[in-house]
Length: 462
Image 1 (cartoon, rainbow, N blue to C red):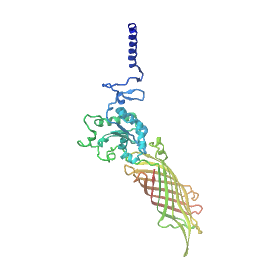
Image 2 (image 1 turned 30 degrees about the horizontal axis):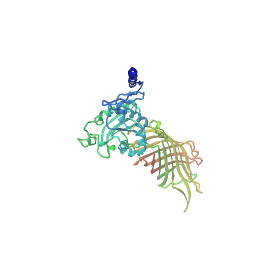
Image 3 (image 1 turned 180 degrees about the vertical axis):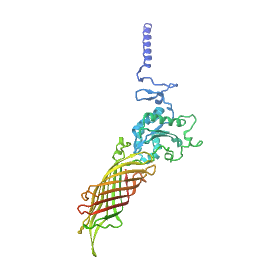
Image 4 (image 1 turned 30 degrees about the vertical axis):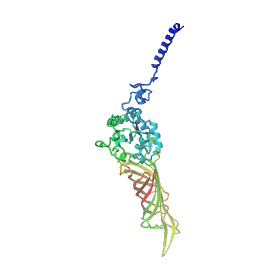
């Protein structure tokens, strides 16, 4: 019986071997059922198998796939992660570092958990992010309007190992090719740091020999080692500024006709209080934040003087209430030339100046409305843009019912020196001057009205 079934058993065994052999070579397009093996027969790490590409294929094994983990710190715009540019930069770095690079979603999730403010992000961000993700190296990306830069930080040795910069023809936007050029230059300069070396302790690299020229030891690494082409210290543009304050006003009324109502005489100094508000709405739209239209703004201000009327009749004097204030609303736009060059633009606004006396004696009221057309110049004094000067001036066209339609001429000018000693706190000092020559209606008094305000205001910038 055994000899009778031996041929059958041999045939079945041959079939099993054939099916098994074909199973080991079974493949589908773009997918293999075999796991890549190392020389010693163990399964390879994911980074050894290559990096998945966007078209579904797999690129060859990255040149820097071996070594300690690397985390990429994204660029920031107005305190938020610049996601579009980070994707291009991350993809270029992953092509060279493979799965040694911490996943993009893990990096963004870690940043969201850490909740670092912009100031701490500059100084403590890289080390904190690396500790959270257990990485030994950090590549810090920064995207400015004119250039993109990257720094390789070897945190174990507390050194900035390399830095690279590429210009951006399209302001603030990094293409895949530019990202590859930036990463390629960075890796070329920092290859010896990134490649694992037998017998080398990375923790001792900062203590052996002289430190590279662009490295700084100590906790202030992130500030002192930044290349000049980066501008991380520049304060983020403010989309809302609010000011309140006071100062002194001066009023001069020159009358060329006599008769009619009593022309008030002003004291040398008048106390004034007021506030101002300025909004850049397009800075809130991510797609327009870096466009040429981002410096369009709306502005409003109100200022009033602490005055009253005093009527002198012989040796008797009586007081009466009075209103003296100014309301200004305008819209403007400036063009940015970049760097330390001035931003130049135009504004159009409406201003109403009012002086009204509630006295028994007939007093001259000077109330008129005008349209202002200003040339505006914004000039930074410090590269951080924490100190700047703003100037504006131009003609005005009167359309008030209190002025006759002839013999009118008006102008206005102002200048402010603004400082931001902290990201939110801001203060400014300046002056506003308006000149108006008109003939009042229906009083028919020809006068020249010169108003000057000099003051100091404090506020918040968001």
